[in-house]
Length: 459
Ligand code: GDP
View 1 (tube, protein in one colour):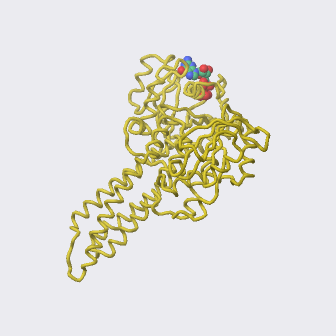
View 2: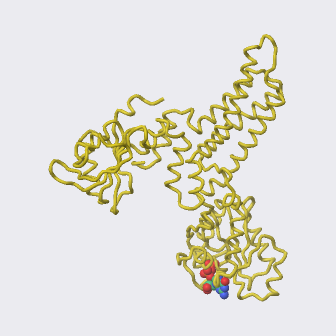
View 3: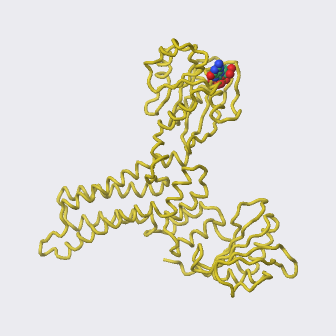
């Protein structure tokens, strides 16, 4: 599977972020990695040094010293790519890194393509495809939860589950195929009811994984959350309280939040993308009318709608009318009664008949913690935060699992309909193919290109 030209090239790239920094790391991988660095390095003879050692010296372009550096030496196959790898830690100046990289290019390296180090690691058997993809997720992780999910996937947790599913199917397929070998004798090695139980249990596992993608999507992309409500209900104040910064415009004049302002807040590791909207009241004002139209547009895209109202000046009937005017068929919604500080206990008690209601004061931040809990509950995040359930975050994996599930359904139908072993075997092979796509037992060049070109250069 390793293309013959792969390890002929020695690749080089800046592996740390572009820009000024204390230190920058330039990485090389390939058969000439050590000799290319050696040709410009004044220090120890790297060829003679053991793997996993550090060496101080200078990088010189002829006699000109470009930098004082520390070279990390990893000799294949004990390296990230399983090839010879050198990491040059130099001073983090874009000028210095460019000069050193250009020097390595002149000495025979070529610039690495996006994700090429990780692609080589995959092709050389360092890890499977799902684990390679998790490397990118890990780099992109920005909360405790996205980090936890990516780390589990990179360390092979998800792959183990897929491989276990695959192993069971392979066992199943081999029983069926054994039958085919003896087909003239009309024997059944594979107990049909045991097979049925096995396929049903695999189907349940895959359904669980498929369902976890909803949470995976929430983790990766956040929850688009619209804050709707009449002007002056306190939407901007609430948004500011949640974001802890003054981004939206707060004012006493109704209808000043004309634009749709989007910002993000992490609540227990879940990213809520808040969309503050203009109020929904009928208006003659042209600019505001555009805002109202945009609110309606945003509501369509929301995964969660918060309807905020002023407790001191709104009746429960009005809230119910507004909610039905919003016309939210499938989207979960939460009612937020604001300005609790201005409402009397009698006023508060009139709302007791409303469901999914939280009382807050956006101004004094009273009730904000309860609101955050309610938000997490609405997106069923608790399981992801506390449990160690496997969560599918990758659309490609989701699609392969879906195809596996469809093929398993065919196997079940086949078993019910008394389909012969050769047909069953064909459907099972399809399942194996789709599961194999996830971990990379089955790959195509297009698939690999698609995955690794999304990585950054140097990874
Ligand atoms: P929006 O039009 O819905 O965005 O409302 P704003 O956030 O601009 O708030 C309208 C007014 O209500 C401002 O003067 C806020 O200071 C005030 N306000 C918002 N929340 C509260 C609250 O919980 N208690 C009190 N007393 N005033 C609030």
